[in-house]
Length: 193
Ligand code: GRF
Image (cartoon, rainbow, N blue to C red; front, side, top):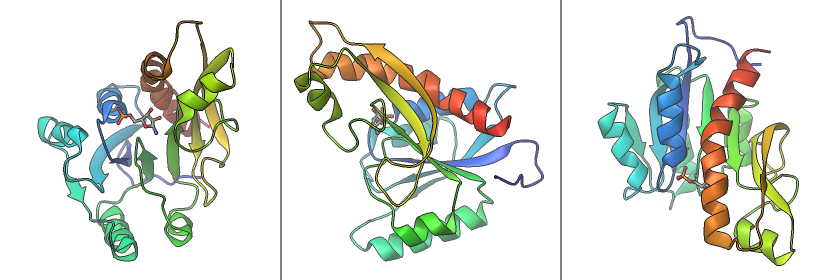
């Protein structure tokens, strides 16, 4: 259960490590009338993350943290989440595993998007593993984050058909396109409950 801070939209922080295309679509969605969230913070472990450009374009506060000292980085993030009255955290291509204690501190309020039909194909190198197993379908999943990797309660999924000609790159591209629609749908779903 997520509690509103009083403004008419729930305040979200998005965590990224790379390109940030999911971030871009989340920002676009957040600006629509139907969006239950606004995005007030972007967090990254990677100062070179391409997605940071969206913080500049859309004038959203960003926080870059060095995860070499993970405990300290997480402590700083938690402070920032509190300071900015963040209601919900959306992990979107965030490549660091958050500690149990961090997750406990923000329990039930952290979401992640994963490019497979969970519970199948948790972890990295998803698309190649799916192809190696000759699956007919793959897809993407938005789920709650728990201390077990890619294992929290599933919120919503989309299936994508795999063609004979698909390779890991084409499959990733097809799935990513669906991810961009799925994350907003997941937010609408959890906030309309
Ligand atoms: C997405 O496929 C996401 O599911 C995975 O990492 C990728 C991030 O892409 N966890 P982007 O940075 O949002 O473009």
